[in-house]
Length: 317
Image (cartoon, rainbow, N blue to C red; front, side, top):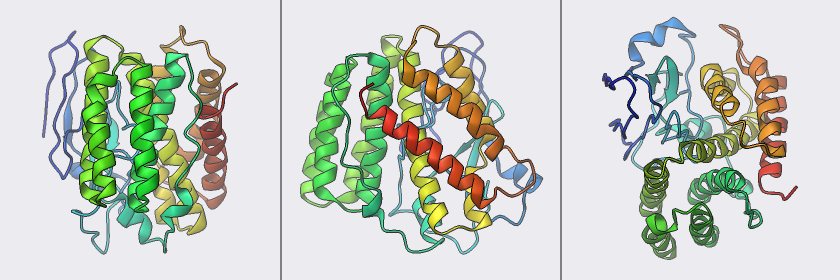
């Protein structure tokens, strides 16, 4: 698939069809090309068996990387051998993983107790909008983890928290119907419905932000989700280490993308933003290994870094 955007205009939502409801890929004012990565699968690590998926369904490249783990699991069958880039797409030469198989791929590493990864701390009520945006991303990511754990109480709590945080950045009206639907579906234990409403919540938040030209905040929502997703990903891979599992972390271009976006936010002079920027510099050499394998020690180190950042995002300075 190839989508070309006119120069100098913001990209609108681009739909990628592969059990993905609405993957908003870019809002940057630059030409964008989206194409299948399958033609480039053989360029690196042909023997890999797992998809390169950082818990992201919505990767809005200037906004995206899903507020975490927009995942669609029930409808996805896990093949016996999954090529690491087979489910990926490329945007501006940045590999954008499609996450449909992520839980199945991680479960192939060994039995995963997803309840252990459900986080109860949803953070205080910040007043700084950049902090709220980061927290919103992590909370939506937590929603998908809670769904995988089939934890109805946690899902309902997250639905309410998402609504509160969205109001804090001025987009509450856009997601109130979705938040209510999340709570209702969790009560009925209709997990696929919950996933769909979390997807719709993400889309509505991103669209509302873009309409009022809050693209940078939207990027922070995405970054918060990516960090939380990477924290959980590395935790699972660390517990059930394999070279193929570690390959899920091979996302150097995506990480560089976030670094570039953070550098364009000098007005957000907050300690947590600076900490994230410095941490990404620290993570880059751990995952940018070329054709080599990512070792267990690097997975452990990335987990330590993202866990530290996750704590910082949900903790008042």
